[in-house]
Image (cartoon, rainbow, N blue to C red; front, side, top):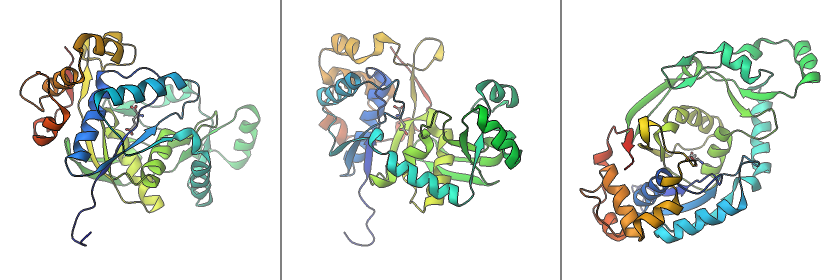
Length: 308
Ligand code: GLU
């Protein structure tokens, strides 16, 4: 590779195996695939099974079969977050050794009472447990196993999203110190995703716009570990009735129902691509054809697409 060439993109599918895929998950995977493949890149498959209770082996199987059915191929993986505890542990101890963590004993009810949602986006942790003395921490740890929070700086973290445009967030005032380990001992999504993307060589992140406001936290973690920032493209959410985002409980938009309704992968992909406006109609379309005329421009600034 010449030194002026941009590295080819490494994107990822990062499904959580907590249910059958739905139209929104298919759209996210389709977009990740198109972004990577239209630039000669590759796709990594990562199974996000951090939540041991809700993750089920049968969903891992069905997700992989559904990707295959759709022709959404991956080049590496599957990697499993459940195999990565040692890496998360090491990073956690590194942050701890730098004095950046503190135990948090707040319950859900405490958090709810103490923080007002900010800009309708997320709740800001008010730093309650950062003010505990060492004695108070010892005393509380007798009764309750704490979660661990990462101290954030009073600094703006900014980036330009390939779809949503410029975005910035002051971590102290708009987010607050955030969890890197939960009170049940599970490592938090923010920590895991940053370590996974870096270790798997992912430099192109395509995912739902609901995660846009998490990205500044991830940029901060990447800076702490000395990782490069990936390029980000936050795609619109597919919403059902009353603008509610589709979830795995919407059975009429899950892969079982979609395969019955559309009969072929081309019909299903064409419908989703058409609804999102990346092609002009909802007619069946082959992936190769979509790849040839692929352009992110029609999605600029779009945060939601109505499911029909
Ligand atoms: N596992 C998450 C999901 O299924 C995606 C997280 C991410 O893309 O960073 O929604």
